Image (cartoon, rainbow, N blue to C red; front, side):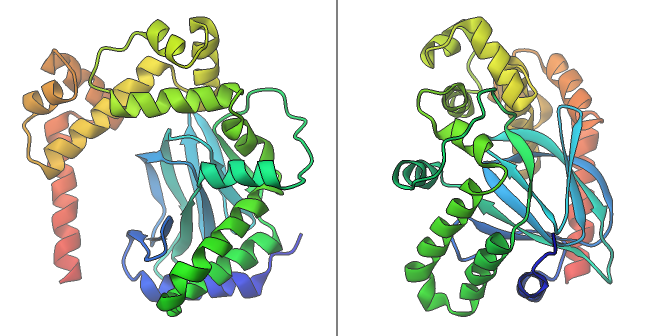
Length: 306
């Protein structure tokens, strides 16, 4: 299948003209963000919320549970849950930076479209993973090109953006990733219940986790809950909670200047030594060294941009 190069060129121009340094940037259109990378990079820890990620130029890969999901101008990444992952840049250079966009999914809109539209029912019965790679279509690219074009017409954003955003959700429900999205929107489905459990974990990650109680909260048996949680996220519930705690601690140390012990206690750890061990396993280095390196990188970036 040939890609709509005209629509791709619109995206490349829109992103390249607004994003001049490597990084991730929110746009004035709700849920839309642009990104730029100028060199290949090893996987870095990230949390990917329910969204679609398009590449207008270059190539990236998301790692979830040891499995790689490569995507480029012909393949899009979609996540239906908040997924802890590692993001890798495969192809990028100063001359041809990796440019793309992220678009946050609105599960309410998806549910409305499923209910209102005469879309054929999905035949998928197995619980799918919370992340997948889909085929980019001309209709999808054209709708994204029209959405980003509104950045040049800011007064039209409140009126026209919701219409185009709704169309993008419709295009996704017509794509080869429809089943993955439908299972999260089906109130009586396992995916929807796991999504509710994740919402609870994000709000209560500092509390002691009793898997049986969380399973009961979303009306599942402990065994079924554990199985489907791992199927969707590539993690156990306890591993997911640990990931949330460690990343919040990293933010506290980096942005709010907490020391290691206070950050550990703040996110629910009782032992700073256990916290440091688990931090090192996730990020590859002990907390103090990691934060010092991150601050050093930020300093270099600040000096380069001045």
